[in-house]
Length: 239
Length: 360
Image 1 (cartoon, rainbow over the protein chains, first blue to last red):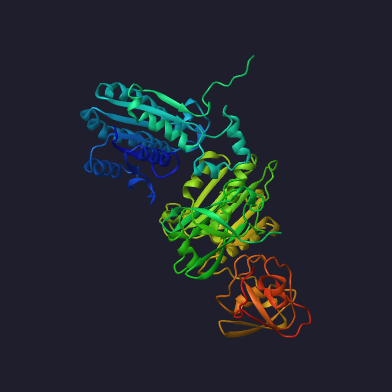
Image 2: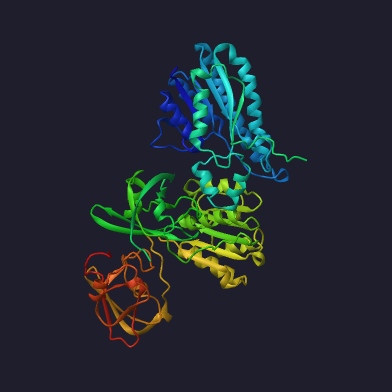
């Protein structure tokens, strides 16, 4: 099945790699992003996803242009703050983008998928939901998304639509490379948390998402696939 | 010292509507040569419509990360317009190895408090410094005061947010916007004397700041320096750089007190100007720029040969020369950024109009 896939947060980092990979697999890709990208393999819509009216207009525009067979809810925001410093507006922001946007896109497009008897929804979460200091709003919002994945999976399974979560660990996007320069103490610290001893590549995350979106993955639904170099595994010492 | 230009493959990414980042693919055998300190810059050279155009750009990535510069498009700016609209992924651009003395030398054992102040594209070296401090000095903290016209024109907004989200307890990011309404007066307007006084009276404990790094246009840098001096901050703690802007070139450090005893005549575009210069004072390039616009220069480090000119009369010496061949020197060419009259020299005449090939 080659279909029309919507990817949010599509022009940067992991979202960009997912978009390229889906396009390579023969899908038509519609990107939703904060900024355009002249080299994007498909059309790009540029809304402000924090604005409800913008989200509604984007959904209407994409829906009017044709049926949607797949959705990758990748757009996200990770504000760092210790619990005592969590701000109300940042809590709202986290849930607006990580949760509300995903719900609205899935609600709008899942009906068509179910009617046509085939569909794929992939929610991108994070290894931070296993617990990571400073990530109250981000991990909280993404954990909500993980729970909704299982709910939607049950509701949509009879209609040929699978719903899964893909949870990447540290990934060497351009942003990651800029913030954690090779050789720095900060990067060494990240590496020491990864049993595989290296940072993941965006293409590796994209390859997993592409598989989850393929016909071969029709028996896989409601799962949280952690692709994190072993970061989420227990690391206690013997004692 | 190898100071030849190296043709490096580029990757171009839009940053804001009028700016882009250029990332260079530095091959393995050039890695040591292109290793940089945060704050340094590179000279880029391109052939634009048959003309050899050279510009300095600060490196905005931390050491270890891919070499990257930020280019803001200046209306009428030849290089910046070309680089942000014509340059494509996979093209090659000639690059000189990193140079510059405006650097932060990182020390992982240090527990320091830094304040970085940037305006507009002055953010580029400051971003490299902030990233380096946060990623390599776990005990140090950093405050960035960053001035822009409006939110849409802020370069590296997402990257700065990513730094803040990674190190919320060690990095403070204060945006000052001159053309966007803001409820809090502190964050509206320009970074000037009053702004620094307001910050010093509240968010920044000036006495506990170990180092200040400033980069922006002349007015901002001078204002912040003056305000800090008023507040009793020793000058040794304040490090500043003016950014090169294709439209408004940085103003050289030449004033009335720089006038000297040697008559100096500079010819450019067929017209001559004369002033008196001090052999122990600024370079002939800096003197020339006080009386004439359009004097060519880029690296100011004796490396790129953009400021090459011919000495027609008088005796001139160069502090450094990494760019001219012995033949060129024998023919009377000098790098004006490194050139000073020899004490007691006859009147000096230098022409930018005589060409004999550029550098090597």
